[in-house]
Length: 352
Length: 116
Image (cartoon, rainbow over all chains, first blue to last red; front, side):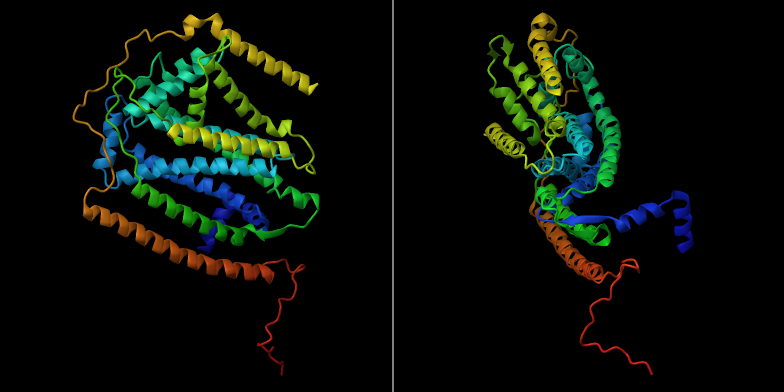
């Protein structure tokens, strides 16, 4: 066994990595819980990959077979329904954790120099996670998913110059058809995973390079923050968080397994009560509340412009808030709370 | 300089947003020209609920969830012991470099062995 370990260490060059992990410290303060969200996101990503591969073994991304294959997974394949349920719920958990992670960083101002690129890669990861949800929503190919995708893929049309092309590209034609399904499947299992791995690698590298941030107060007062070794003290604590999250995920997946609607009919009118996944609800409601026309601009265009500006602001925030770390950044804090309140209110309104 | 550049780009985006839809409204509002593919008609398909249907399955689910949380509880208990142990090791600087290592606090109950 020892020989094998030495052989592997020689070939893979893992000695410096383990030496780094042994020396790595994790600061301990009142916001330390935010560190656990990062690793928990990785846990859910891992679950997504494993369950996704299992589902892909039986799923067929064609117009004729998509809905039927999902129905088969749920009714005929042993434990298929729970695998699908875990896949669906872990995606929601992952996106929720990514949002909590980013909001925590926004509130603690951990995006400031030298961690600007880390923040930007994090926003990228949030967008990719949401795209995973969007592309995955169509795959069961039922009435609801088809209508929601029609609405979703219609939005880029408003973007000037490239909008119409973008919609055509996403749909693989003028309308949502079997080609869209195949396209979304490829995005879901090939393109987006490649992107997420690449950006995740950059993100983790940057986190290691710049180290974990500590609260502004501690930095301002030049306090020495208590730190725990990453291995084994922090990893063991993380394992407890993972256990609890895993328990919650399995419980929810077993009790609230998602159902499957009848196969989508492309010619049928859109069913009532189309709703996207919960993390798109506030955007969906934002699009709905805008009037048809504001002066000479369509309300939809204005809504998409507003959403795009918010996303751009989020992405470029470290370049906008370039104040030194001594400053508290109260404006950003209040904007974050305002955004949270708005998103929650819109989501609740959409559900009513 | 940076602010004026930002303002310029924002103005450009806002203008393109407002003007372009009016330049080519026909293109944007086009109805699908090609007939969409027809789906496979499967009239017998209905909403599938994966939740347990009979009392036996329902019981199985609750038994599973109970066992799951029981196992997690035991695992967390073991992990807590491991955390305490790891923290103690850290406190006593068990793994610290020999140069930085300090003497661990002595247990007053244990008397050191006397050398004969």
